[in-house]
Image (tube, rainbow, N blue to C red; front, top):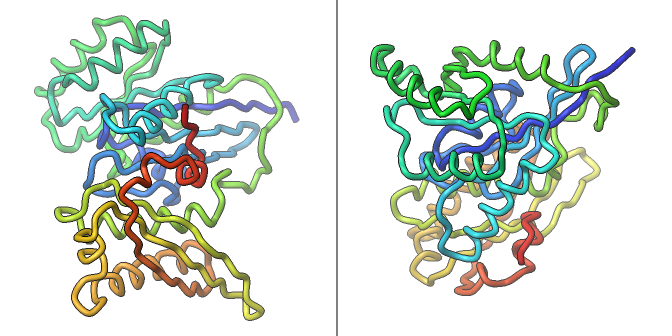
Length: 297
């Protein structure tokens, strides 16, 4: 059988819906999704294998003007994902009605790189058609996009049409991964991301996004279950108190919710143990970045 294979980089501003789109395309939850901007930190590769075609979908951190070392590493990882990509999807939040400064900066960078892209206007379920057309015409007039799709990554509207375009655009070549593989991200790191998702969801307004979840131990047990130990790292003593909650109530809630999702995701019993520590300088230390698979320079 002649096969096709390629990679698609999904880029866009924070909260444009990149991770939601990845999950919708895969039909499975792989990237974490929260209300908080800049949730995605690691490069997540999701794999679609249908018929004779395999697509590697690369979900990237949101593109914005970085300030900290962590943010610079995240943005650099996102731009690096374009190298070797056969197709680039620029996801734009259509509900915003006008491209903001972040979207314009991304488009300028794409233009400087002479990078053609496919434009995906997301969240069309939140805007009336007559409001959407001016935005479509404005972005189309730039001449940067080979095609424009209007979708709702949340509801799935328009996603199958986009998926068909991706499958048809992949070049001839051998598959890079086994047919039944969903991602190249380790289960240890995926589990840490699930816990971080619960951390951000339950402490959305109180806790800065700078908190990290580190995988510490993974033990396979004879009964088929798995024991996972993770450490939540925060930058201030006050943040640690928030995560723990009164008499440890909050961290128990975070652990319970993460444990339930991991059990469903892995299809077996998960024993999850969480610790919380304070490290004011964790964002400046290379060992943390290596855990996330982020390169520092």
